[in-house]
Image (tube, rainbow, N blue to C red):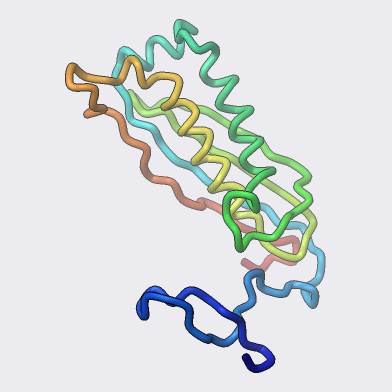
Length: 169
């Protein structure tokens, strides 16, 4: 094997092949530390029965918004463990907001840090896990007679704002 090459599984050839080495984590050492903020949002569509049970705190597993807020915060902090190419970032803040739009629960997360790379993956991961926690807590209500979830859907997960302190995006 030549220098700069590594063994890597080659799925097209059905075995190991020699390929050029690939950087698994992109170098950011040359970038300046600046304040970075990202805001992401997403929605969980559900039945009126689940919405009512969440609002009235009648979910067997506990307070849905409280548990899901904790899950969202944990997810922001653990993003590099779930998404291999993400850099560990020293987060300075993470806020989680829950609002209703009819039978859709909206999760909006804002994350900030002074660092060399953006925090949009942390915000997206946080929203995703927060909504998954809600779904996990209401799935017994959402199931139909066949054990399916016809009215339940996580959707619209996206970055709604990204900025750095120098004003560039």
